[in-house]
Amino acid sequence: MKVLHLSKSDVLGGAAKAAYRLHKGLLALGVRSVMAVDEKASTEPTVRGPQSLAAKALAKASGHIDRLPLRLYPGHQPAWHPAWLRRKTPPKKLLREAHIVNLHWIVEGFVAVKDLAALEHRPVVWTLHDMWPFTGGCHYAQQCQKFTQLCGACPQLGSARQRDLSRWVFKRKRRIYRSLSLHVVCPSRWLAQQVGQSALLGSFPVRVIPNGLDTSVFKPIDKAVAREALNLPQGKRLLLFGAHDVKEERKGFSYLKEALSHLKARPMDREGLLLLLFGAGREDSTSLPFEAHHVGMLSDEVSLALLYSAADVYITPSLQDNLPNTVMEALACGTPVVAFASGGIPEMFAHQEEGYLAQSGDSQDLARGILWVLNHPRYQELADKARDRAQRHYSQETQARRYRELYQELVG
Image: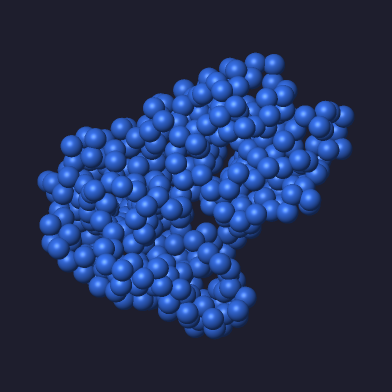
């Protein structure tokens, strides 16, 4: 059995990392797994990316070309993709050899919706990393429920017209999906519930398989050792926040800023707190109520494990999310998590067991959660429970085994 994974990248972005980890887990089980990408950052030989300079240039430019229709909507949200650009992907040779095709994050000019028609007559597994496969183009619908019937007048496009780009993309998906033998995999029960309500994917079989990670890499490291390795202060309590784009509104950084302001008003040692930020995009540190340090993008997993281990608490105030890698990584490193109870996050850890689940959008409750973790009399117990939960629910091997079982069912 040979499996072909299609993902825009193998490392760049949370969905890419999740796809690559699955690929590596399957290889470890002896599954013949190949990954085709537009942007290859790893040295893994079973990941196939563009070879020639011309192909690499086209891959780089395709994302910009694919977004050209969005110029008709100057008020559009950045996380919106039409996926109209046809580049004859996936590669015919890899497609011909594959018994199963596993789709991941395929936008930014990688695979056009219409090109999915080439996958008919074979089992297709689509691992959903967000809501894009069943919306008219947005990756998270937020308060909009139009994906349950028919998109149009898209609020994320700033459109008032029913027959807008979102409706065109929606109808295009509907027409192509009808010809496919699709089997949907959702990393969270929350996302599976959204799929069940959708007009595009609601009739296809859905299975919930959480993402996995290598718990031998993401593991607790002595805090003093981790801080020394990263040149971080030993005597401060470190609050950690990370996102692929720190300034993405859905990630809720504005609520974290409000929570920090609430903490500043409380009688506590304000000089003893340091906020650590990682990811793309920069926040002006002068606008923050506490000292902050931006460590930038950390691409290697060893550095990430050190950073999580160095922190006293990981904070994720996302307003809507699937099954964030960052939460999984923090738990695996024994770092308690404070998060809004939104999307699939409440499935990842228990309130006041491995961390604190604040009411979504309530910055005061977020501040209470941060204090609850920092001042917990049995902090190490929280850390141990976090690590244990990650090992039980999010190991790479467990994830890969469940996918292998699904593949075997589909190919007989």
